[in-house]
Length: 208
Image (cartoon, rainbow, N blue to C red):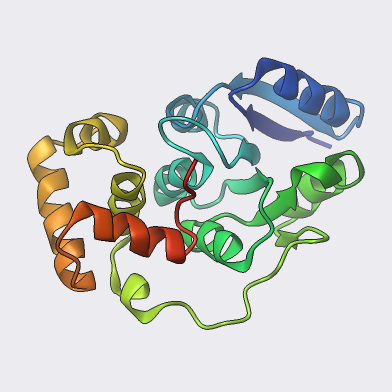
């Protein structure tokens, strides 16, 4: 029986080593590689096509949700498990909207990580203990945005410039500017500061 191939993504090498030890203690799981950021995760996902990606949510550059959007757009059969410090419903909804199939709190990892990876590999969805599964309907304004507009909205609300967003997503700066103008028109928001406030209220970004 083939082992479940797993890609580990976290910006802290010691954390990745800990995850690797937990996962490789199980004979059914094989860690195929590690990535230190979202951009590297996207590249390795295309190269290695792992069955499951264990992905930290909070990373510089492309965070876990952003990286997931990029990965599942081209490879929808890859199951992404997000690891987060935040259990709030908005955070979970945004992750699921991006294509995440599993959501665990980091504090529950020792107990749940291996079982969650196996469940995702079997095609199931996993919402970990202590996580608030979405119960309210999605925001209609946000829901009308395209996946690319949602991605640019979240990056813009993190304070990233069009140039930075273009580099992260491998787009032209002009394309980012057009998407940004379209999404702000759709949301009836005219200033970046108001966009940040709106995104924080929706749980799309967190203020440091």
